[in-house]
Length: 185
Image (cartoon, rainbow, N blue to C red):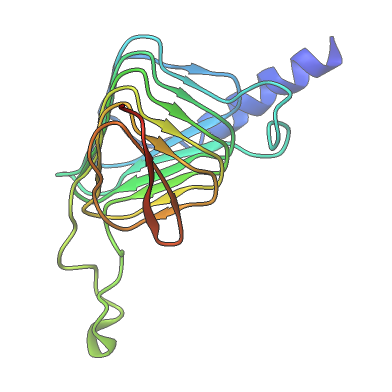
């Protein structure tokens, strides 16, 4: 009983940090979810965040930010995200239907700061869309950076840093990620 009350109030507390007014659709939050920014965040059917009794369930939350008024974050249908997830968009990030995302994953479409040393305090002048196509399985501790498309049915191995796009039906992994195997004969 105490545990249920604790999680109920913990989710309510974190929800107070949500400031985004452009949320379309609904999701299930098994752990706290904070949605911030000025852009649109869209949820398809049966989207969930947090896995009970999995690593980082008791001490983390999901952070979702569509930073600018032009930003878009789109979650397809039946997307399930494990604990300690972070996604920040300055342009557009699309996660296709039936995606599975492991714990402690980060997805961004921007460097957030200009890479030119003389302009480092300025915003990244060149955000690039990220697309995770349908039925992609992303392992734990994965980072996906700007400009990446991951083809449908592909698998991203745990601990990978994805810096470029990959086709359908492949297993990718490493730092930086590369194709490890094909899922087709």
